[in-house]
Length: 548
Image 1: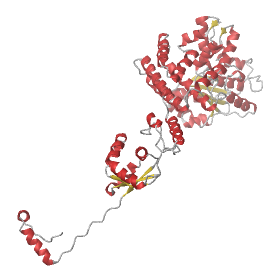
Image 2: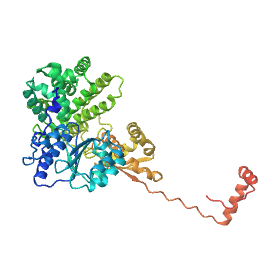
Image 3: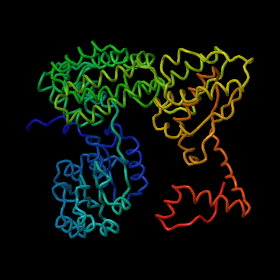
Image 4: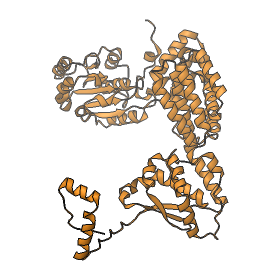
């Protein structure tokens, strides 16, 4: 017999051999033992997680002649035929190559025939999402009311492409990505049985590269055995699959957190010289910084990741160097780099630029940190902070520079009267408008028609011309209001809040009434005026009344 690859040789043959899908196996065990079997099952999950394998084991269990509880015996004729793919009662169909309506009509015609050996005729359709809409519609009625001896098992990686009318007629099982620990344990078991010596770091590197797919991990191990024979180290895995070592990854992440740009450039050069996949490096870093966020918020005992103890210790040390705000900015930059990497002409340049940006994001103070400094400085001066955390938006607090943070507001003297402040403010108002408009240029058109009205120890009211009352909402914009508030606080040397008040319209003066004699005298006076007479002659007009 010829060589059989590890992925096929070690394919699970009973439910207990399935790795990392306990929630699915337990449900199927109970369904078989209680004889509560649906007529259609849908297995959903990423590649290599056991969808088709689970469907085959279920088919064997249903048609097994010597079933042990819910497990197939793998010894009877029915089990052997299913394993070899020669069973007439279990038909496997590839949805990608048999996707047309003619294929489904043939299946529908054959459904009515009774099974040859076992109690059920079972159809396993892999990649069912590849079927055409017409094919789905052709199978719909049969799927809803199949003969008692027929079962349908569907497998797909993209359930969103399956018609909802099909989904509603199936019991759905979502298979999870298999954890690094489970993949490592299974590979260790295979290596021991095959007489392979492989280091723990090499097993971990294979599990990382498999991204939750056990079949991919087994295929990778098979390739490494062909490459290195019976002795496999981490360097072999890294060279074959273009991965970077755990030490390189942790060192690069440390350089980013420390703002060590020469270290970043040197590490990038080393990665490039060794021919590693640049996009894969970005994904590895993304996963590493995600783990740092988990450690920061959920602690090292979180179930959100499954890593060796030595790796968790390094994550704890690196997480202590940073904050969630900085880590989130780094993650955003890495996500952007990943999306641009596939179209980049020079992937190395893009990687270097992205990592340098990430290092700057890791060392520049966040808004939250600046706010804490402002609050601490204000508290030390006995002054309430002018901006609360609920008022701010990330990177939108204008004028709050590091220099401004270091300069606490001067202490307010109680000897000053608010009326003195109002006079000073009115005098300096045009200059203050100029300063405000440098930070928020859009406010210039509205502020030119304003003037200070009232000043108290904690409050400033600014009057707004009634002609521009509609612009009040624009001036009360959070960004504009915060900037005005800051400038007035700096000017008055104490924290103040600001509001705008629309002035009342002035009543127009009524025209004075004049007696008829005075009216006639005035008319004559205007008639004698050369300019008025020229106008009257040009328009054939007359003077009706004179108002003063």
